[in-house]
Image 1 (tube, rainbow, N blue to C red):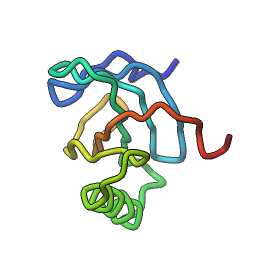
Image 2: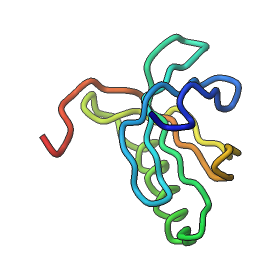
Image 3: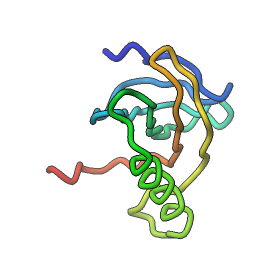
Amino acid sequence: MDQLANQVLHDRYQLQSLLGRKTGRRTFLATDLETRSPIVIKLLLFGPDFTWNDLKLFEREAETLKSLEHPAIPKYLDFFEVETELGKGFALVQSYIEARSLRE
């Protein structure tokens, strides 16, 4: 269980469970408290291993999602600054698509 689970971000998104973790990044299944729908939140947190290139890639991912429209690709929903007990960073919110992982 991740220590951020069950926290509410941006007064709207409640983190549920950790889906993935990479250095400086975490991906959560969450619930949009306004629509009651499942969503995915990707967090990029500033830390000792953070580089500005990480932020550029994260912002590029958000911009790419905004421009794509396909039922098999998550939809961009929101992007905002975040402050957690693990530090400051950014959050990318996208729609949840129930599917197999790329690894599968």
